[in-house]
Image (cartoon, rainbow over all chains, first blue to last red; front, side):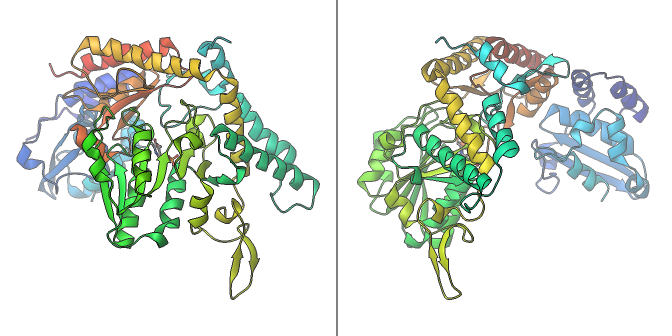
Length: 131
Length: 405
Ligand SMILES: Cc1ncc(COP(=O)(O)O)c(C=O)c1O
């Protein structure tokens, strides 16, 4: 359904990064794998609040098998969204809830996106995915 | 004495480091500046040699602390040319100082009175007035300055017999433009409005003379002018300070307390409840001293030269929207169509360049400019031409990487 790279590919690409700059470039590359949402899908309801960039998230499928659609007006955020979704797509609701996504993202060199700074919304995204 | 930012830099220990193996280019000075040794040493010295509570007298250390604390007030009064030391009230910063005035004047406001601000204000000089209007039934009105900071003759109509308060920034934090401050203040005074000037973005760059401006209140933060965080100033004319009701009450601001009533202390203490931020005041005085030691004209010239250098280089490139003026500013505020400023910011950061992306606490101004945010590089006296170029080079790289193919 969603043509996301496998978690293995994402891990390989991001874990190979040796600097912030390399992670940046890897995220830009990953961002291209995210199908964009239509304007009709970018509703207020689908928007995740608390992000400096606009982020929309749509949860699909059933509790047995979850799929996600997402978009952002910022490219790096689209890369981060690809990384997150690749980890959880196709899993059961319960499996997703039981995952330690923060740790998994930290292992992908994305910890600087996880700090609860004033401008960071990744934590609100995770909260919504695991709700 | 020739001004030399390369030598001056040595007085800022924090700048002697790299960020992710790149030279650290700190260009987020409009948010907060770094602190020179003079300031760091003054704060250390206070804690190492004469820390005690002030105004309680009675012992050796307390006398020394009180002396330094009151000398700090005098230093700051001189810095802005206040006529009396008692006209300088300590606050946490610009935000608290504005709130002190907004709460302190509440008792004088009536329904349908008008509070006038400009369209270039930081939220700190907007929300307290809006909330004051909500509490009192007064109306908040907005004088629409253009992004060039221009004054149009028809702006006069915004001042009316009901204008009770006029509050304006001296320099816009988001786009670096200077407002036509004197024209506006003079106009406001014709209507006997209280006038407040937000000097947060001015004090580090422009010599300030509150008597020349002739405003009722002038407010600023220490941390944006090489001083510590958590300390700022509410300057007021004595008639203006006299009518302010204390925003906070408690110890230190009283002369006599009984269960039935309290007699308040005189200025400045009446408006300074509780133990003050003593090391902050001493640090801020040291920051004034630091600035006084510089050739202020050369310093401003240098900062404006850096901003103009960036402006000129980026203007040549095309495809970059610049919102700050070409001249007479110390920052460059820009956006690139179809690229989020947050992405530009992240790439700049990855290569050691510290700038700020976002709305700069000025949502209405961003709406006026038709953008969700801008990228802002803001300069201070210790920045170098190499840093200005580092910013331009990395920004152009970022645009290339982020542009949609
Ligand atoms: C123009 C202006 N006003 C007010 C403020 C608020 O200052 P503070 O956060 O130090 O209270 C700032 C700080 O960003 C500012 O730039």
